[in-house]
Length: 276
Image (cartoon, rainbow, N blue to C red; front, side):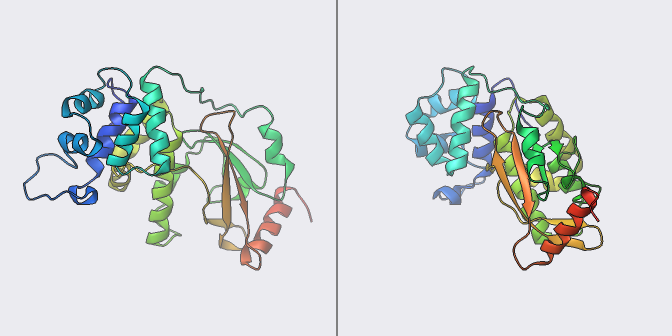
């Protein structure tokens, strides 16, 4: 499974996205037998209104950075949504030599205090490759085995399949996490390469989701979490981006009013902080 090659992150993303689409999705007929997956390069070039030779050079990582107009035309041709378009422009900058902010496992200064500021809200920090890099006391008691620094959210969801989730709930969770991994991670990251290579070698479900080439941030979700004495409880989580560190986010869990999660969270907080 490819992550990044010598052709660069822009070329890699264009190729992956092209291969994830079908002719029917872009309004093309497909009466011939195809020898390649997805769209042909000539079809993408025609849809974007550029020459086939120029598109070939872009996808092979040759030549200068495409203009904003060309990138927007490619975004439309490849049916990218607002997050995919953002990702396309970002990887174009990386391919042009612009450095991305360093991704670090160190908790950004001041953010640690935010984790503990609201002790009744389980919360954790994750970096661009969705590794947990910080968690408050209440957050440590969530989920099977607890959230902990070093846990990778993507690898964890494939390890816990599908129980306790329904198949549809698990697929929605896994799909969102895989798309978030592509969105948040620096495509040149060795850690990203390790995660993708490891899961690709062991889990065809990951291969299927990664090949969709979906891109979106880690935001709202409705996870099932295990809380002692209450079993599996549905909560809501919201994820906030931390602008000072590319890809770093903070996720907080809370219960919707009048749901079993309200009392379950109260009990969890009492145990986390040793309250009677």
